[in-house]
Image 1 (spheres, helix red, strand yellow):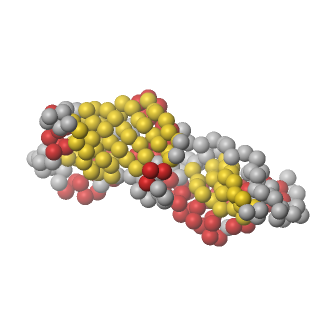
Image 2 (tube, helix red, strand yellow):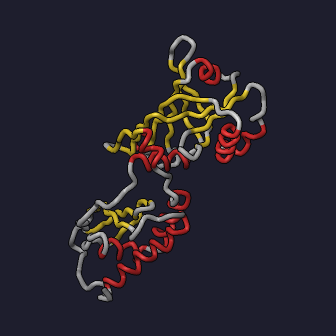
Image 3 (cartoon, helix red, strand yellow):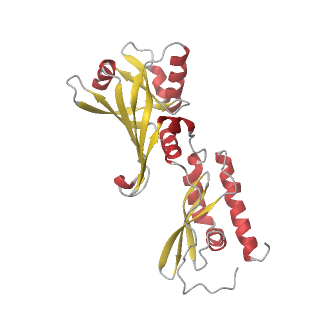
Length: 265
């Protein structure tokens, strides 16, 4: 540990920046992480109609729906292909209006042949029970071909995404394990997080640090000292390619920070 006495100093992180997911990556990640949304269709009289639906994204990130014409939104899609799908993360803590959310807007199409088989596979991957009723006469497959995206990441964080950027982006592969790793770091590795905050995030006056998030590009910290707190971010050396990379990447950050503390680099 450093001999520097930081008990009377605020954390004062030098840099809260660093690479983060783009709005397109955020949208693709949320679409792949959730299977429930609110579908807006055009009613018979031209009025908007919103329905709770389940979906599964295909490889391009277009939601695949399996809906019945017994439902009003199913009949609406037959008459008018214009639709939008609103998706949020219900597991995110805090104010619902401060949680990540997106709206995908475009037109629906009905795939046929091999395209229909691939679309059904994409839907069933997210909604396994759907295969039981996929062959019923009143049910039909629809693919919402996304034309534009509106992403809201929370207070004062929002952006519009084009179809091209949305399709070119990919979901963050670390998302399935990120929350568990954050909880583990905060429970069992407080000293390592503090070392990372002080030596790699520049929060020299921090007396404690907690991890508030992890993605493929780095980790977010909340650093506290002298009764004040500050946010900080530390990037990984390279973007992580799979969920299994999260643990070794965080271990590497802690080892590097401790080496700096001990004068090893």
